[in-house]
Length: 402
Ligand SMILES: *Cc1c(COP(=O)(O)O)cnc(C)c1O
Image 1 (cartoon, rainbow, N blue to C red):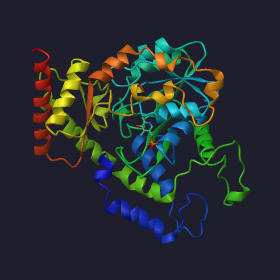
Image 2 (cartoon, rainbow, N blue to C red):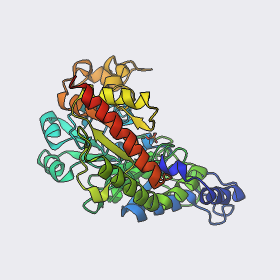
Image 3 (cartoon, protein in one colour):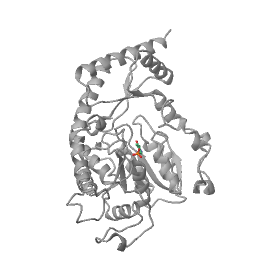
Image 4 (tube, rainbow, N blue to C red):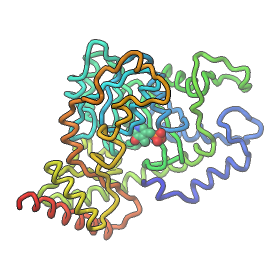
């Protein structure tokens, strides 16, 4: 949670600017706000960092996914390919729009693979919601031809990969629209917040309207604005945007420290038998928020987790069983437990979610242990952590041979 580690004077200054005027709303009130526009500044800062032509801030990463999908034209009855390893918000956003999630396989990049997408495509597949997981990125050179070949809409959920890029292009900018999360656990936080990015002006305008009841935001009198589309309230407040602005400015620093410590850990661990790493298709573009270990098999990973717990080594996630990021934990989805009826319950599910056969994803996530990189570590702490991880893996590997 690097951003939260660095919360300080810079964030307080931006918040105080807003408190001085009391204009917590991002639109209008030109007189009273004395030139303070934090949501706009936050968007400009995200554009500067990512190179996006357009950026629009909203209330959360989840509403950013929903807005990106809606502005890309995805809605009721549309089949959307999604990964089984993601924060559930991706799948929920598809469902809440009335669209139908189709699960495809990931690979050692921890993201959907070109082969996985290819296998899941049918004649009526509309889109792919590609998720860039654990600070890294999907293998775009392999995936983009599949998207083009089948004429699919690409939307990127880069909720966990703000600041990451692939061969010079920031994740989120390969398709029609992309998005980032600024919740409390991401590389930069706004408390709660999200940003939609796109290079397509039409998509941007739709996102801008959709996330604020359809308002076109033309003119200075809110009550007199036009409404090109129906929408909803996914607005960000000026206070949250103020924090997001200060934090986004810190991302280049956080990213460089993360990379340094991640590289150190990888070097120190590279000679430990049994340890390999998740694939990062462009290591120079890694936001490096996680060190992702791949153990030889699921039982060895489980024994490593046991050893880590025994020795009090914290700061890691074993997504296969412990965390809410893998389909094995999504019983509510498999049993279609909903608060009220969703369109998918009328259209019918495109796959039987309780009987999904995703052996590759099971195999990869079964072997994966992810350590959060902290930008406030020092080198001594990094070396100690590497030694402790190495000891635990060795113990787990040796146990396999007795
Ligand atoms: C965190 C996250 C989200 C949701 O973001 P919130 O800001 O918590 O709503 C969506 N997708 C991914 C991949 C995430 O990691």
